[in-house]
Length: 251
Image 1: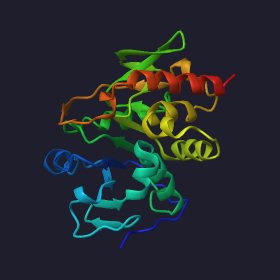
Image 2: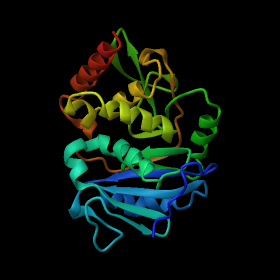
Image 3: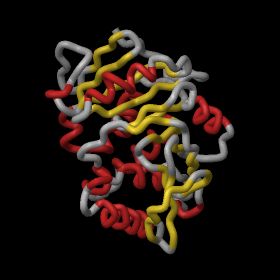
Image 4: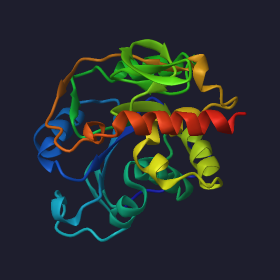
């Protein structure tokens, strides 16, 4: 039975971690989940299953169903995977908050190809409590130069945090998702360029070129990443198309 909290009962000093599962369940089973279970600051681990054929940890999981096994939540997210692709993680944060199932103050959302070393993610929470940045990356960031997406990795204040790992306020994320839902944004932008989209919509002033996000490179082990979104032949083209689209919204 999942415990529901009153909307006013915000859980602090701990935060959940959300990881999408689609084609690389072995990364989660063998590396990511065992590592996260050692972190006392984590309130729960949310595994978002987008592929029925790679579900693990539970005997059966229906679409939109949530099953809790100790500190791990397994969420069936098959239709949303088809509809939203990468953006389904942000949509699920919004949905769980609205249902009263996600009452922590902040959340870490990470990919299935990265395993943070013990106690490293605590540094994200420390930076979050300094209240100087909107979204925080545990890997690296990017900047916008002359309205173009720059591929050089950066640390510290940055324009864009990469979707490999993003930490932030759940309320801020939910406000951004609600705003995105109310706009007719092309599917290929929110499906695959969800990190740039969230970096824009989480900003109240929408000034994405003002380095309002933060990269805090943590120690981690890279895992198998076959068929990663970043390996697409048109990846850079889509990054810049998304950026141009968002910058034009501010005009």
